[in-house]
Length: 467
Ligand code: HEM
Ligand SMILES: CCCCC[C@H](O)/C=C/[C@@H]1[C@@H](C/C=C\CCCC(=O)O)[C@@H]2C[C@H]1OO2
Image (cartoon, rainbow, N blue to C red; front, side):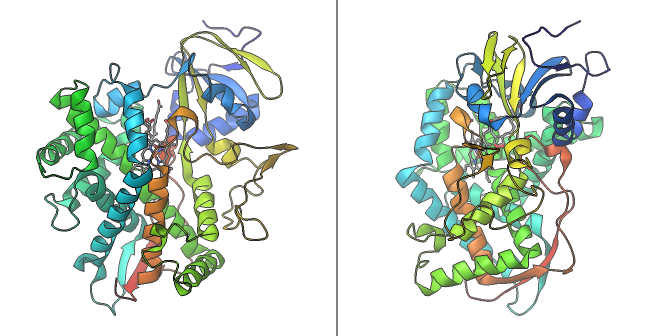
């Protein structure tokens, strides 16, 4: 029965009562929102499964949402409950955020990056990967990247051994991938009955595996996971909730870096000019001795070409829906002066993937991978991007923004850089079929961080140097 008031954004309830556009939203958020943008412009309200969601797609106005934390409140609670069966309503998020920020910065960050580097080295050296030096090994790139970064990330944050970890890494990775594969459907309550059973049993097995990890390690140096658990304990969280929170953190810290490394290496393998430019940069650094401790550990080593390739990869494949609950009626003033009222009880969302990231008025040929898009003509980092005459603060937003910006971004950048550096310096890697192109992305995943491919890229590789 809801109707639009004069001062509200265009309202589109869809044809089906209550359900509205839920199915279209779930199936492919990017396609649906881009159609709505064509129909209504850069702000509109849609109905989906009984909820009213206002979507704002003008990056010049994003700060209006991001900086209004009094009336527009972040809450992942509904998703957290559905996916992780975890109630965090009484949890002290502010304290947790401070803890996270501290644990992913300064010396702590350096320690974590060093540990990640060692773990990646150990995993890449392992017999399973290296095999005989002279023989090509066939693989699929997504699995290659995700499994290595997951295992190294797990060891770095959840265990602390570089060698002889106490858990079966392959088993935990397999369970994690099954869980991760069903997560978007779990969050949107669209699991089929067979999938439901799989999702709940794999979640239970992961909780059990993480409980074992929680019991391990009473030694003097603590892992990130042990310190995090102590923080939860001090906040009065019971043991059952602790292990559920641990799975949430396992997913948040591991679900993005592997897929990001896949897209990056995939773009390099399918764009020879980009691959040559990155290799040239690495070779130059190696010749100058600038990568003696492993490229990213040497803070002086500047890598503008790699950085541009990473930014371009994330522009094309990072698709998070930034969402806030409207706690009280709020007047929103957009950058061009238009004013709209947001209704209490609705949600308001930003979708940076559509704008700025894929917006043709900001990025020329936005669907094309251009490795030097984030480079100036003199080879320095490009930061000036325009929409019309106005220079943009947000020209790409893979890490989110505002109070919820990814706290692990420096660690993620360092891990992806280390991984790509190691792969390119230690292996010859090529497409099994030189004519293959990048697979499309799985549209159901859209809104949940890094996109994942529908299909994979077949590759072959062999070792070219001692690791
Ligand atoms: C390419 C890799 C990554 C991308 C694109 C990414 C992206 C994001 C985004 C967009 C958010 C905010 C979501 C929102 O607004 O609700 C976020 C949150 C977060 N990220 Fe990342 N992330 C990446 C890797 C990592 C890694 C490697 C870690 C840690 C090891 C990490 C730790 C976190 C944490 C703890 C949060 C939650 C912050 C909070 O709840 O306030 N991320 N990430
Ligand atoms: C499952 C929700 C827990 C949110 C934890 C954290 O704040 C966010 C981490 C992001 C996560 C983004 C994906 C989905 C958020 C849905 C929010 C909503 O209310 O609809 C994923 C890992 C981190 O980047 O990508």
